[in-house]
Length: 196
Image (tube, rainbow, N blue to C red; front, side):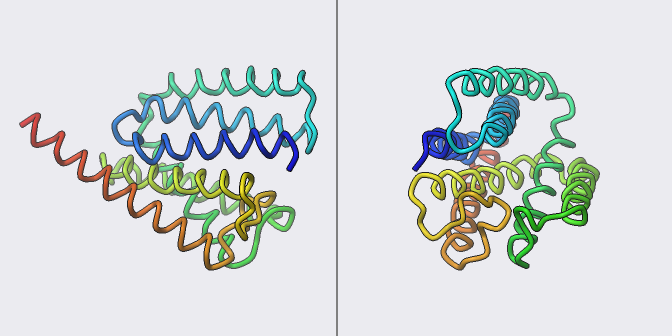
């Protein structure tokens, strides 16, 4: 296992657990965490399997910048949560039909962008439930990515779009998402009862 896979695996797993547990309650911080993960992972992807210390520093800076942007974009939270929901659903469906990684192509990326747009459009209509759905699915996806990179448990960690093709990763993803969604929904209802 390369140092890049180890660091990316730990980052994805820790971020996924945070998003699954606190997504609905601390959505502003979830946006910051997701921004950091995206910025850091793009730099690590560009750096290759054995990144230098300078590339780690650049990854942390890029992640920090995107984290600050994500944190500041809280006013668009319903649209962003809907977009996240749409992206995860499209990536899951693409993985299930066997399209992913280098095979994603222009059509796949168009579907991902369309999923983000449709999710953002309908996110406002789902209201606060969109936070629960989006963070449960995104958090579960990050947990599976982290496990793939750390433990190689029958999951294609180097191909995040195709990782849900096999039965075990798909069942694990759905189980984590369901548990996270139900827990967050219960917490949201309890908070609403306390406020009224």
